[in-house]
Image (cartoon, one colour):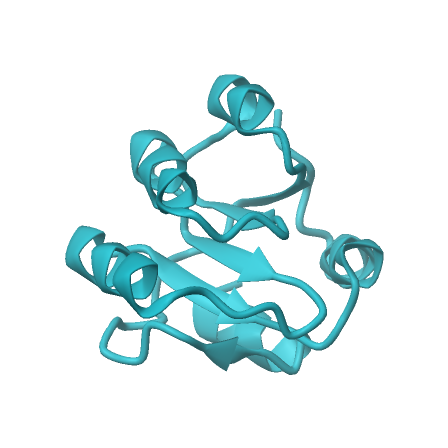
Length: 114
């Protein structure tokens, strides 16, 4: 599944509008503890988190994630979104809860991280 297809599945908006949505989503994850995500992040991951600060982008870049998904229509500050665009990390915002986001990814057979 591509980031674009995930965006459609989650009824999400791409907050980093200038970035392409063609990256392949290979696994999903939900966690708000950055140190934990740093040790479990993977290339191609779609990461659901309510965190919105600059370190979210740094962790996503470190793991070469496909995208970050913010649940419940959470927004990010403009400066953080600019950093995400500069680093090539797509940020999606969905009206769904983290639980629902993970459930939809699971239904589509996107595996959890390995």
